[in-house]
Image 1: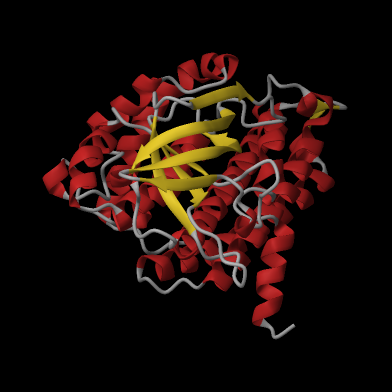
Image 2: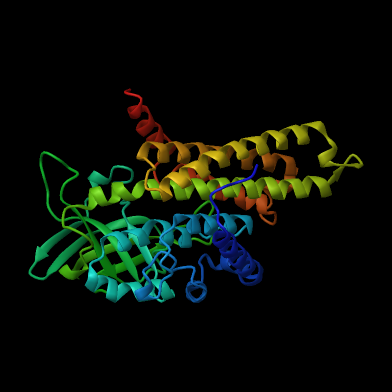
Length: 382
């Protein structure tokens, strides 16, 4: 079905990025997988192309285009090229908005030029060993001491943490007995600050090119000037950013499902069994027809959510719905597609195997499917 909402500028951007990924990333992506990380030069090259700075003001070298549709194009094209670049997605879709929304003028001057050029890469530290979806349970503390906060605690499952020059850390700066959500703040911790340690790269089922590490903070003295936004306002800041994060996950999940369909259609046409292509058999045709229809329905849902988000109207409930539906669809799709590969679908040499492994986590991060259902059910008065 014909999609609306993408202008000629969006499509020009799409073609530029598609050409770049095909030429510069696809040929070396297996090397990145083996290394378990994206090289830093990749981000600097994206900076030169203007990809990283689209949403930043022109005075800092940005494109002055705070239009999330460009982010959607990036996620779709990475999935189409079969290069899962979660570190890029987290940086652009999750972390950068906190800087754009809450940095003061001095912070903008310090950090924006590097974020635009790719010389600075950012991650966010929310999840802790004992606090995931329950952000109010954060135990990392930041105690004011003159012109510094003394930061102590630990974070885990930090995407892009190994590469990060700046980490936006959620820490408790005060405590309220009546409301656990109060007293959380966002502090920007810079790589190299004494007491800030980056731990091991966690071995994962999928997303092999996305470094995911543990962080620890031992008496890290973070200047007060690194406070992002108001002290004690982190819960509201994080809640405001969640719809975009969940929409981003939905977009990339759906795009990955479409990539799974495309690579499976190619395979079943070429693979022969019993003297006939796999595509000849009714089961193959029916399975892929059903998958294609579900993807088309999800695309309509995503495009509507994207339009509402760009207009500033996407509600947390609708963001939860689109994330729930698209991540669950992704799981169903890659499973059905892998089955049509037979034994080859279990071999990592085939992209469907990587798509299968990468898909599992989307129903967990950004809020589990169970959390999404809780949000939706509350909107029904349940």
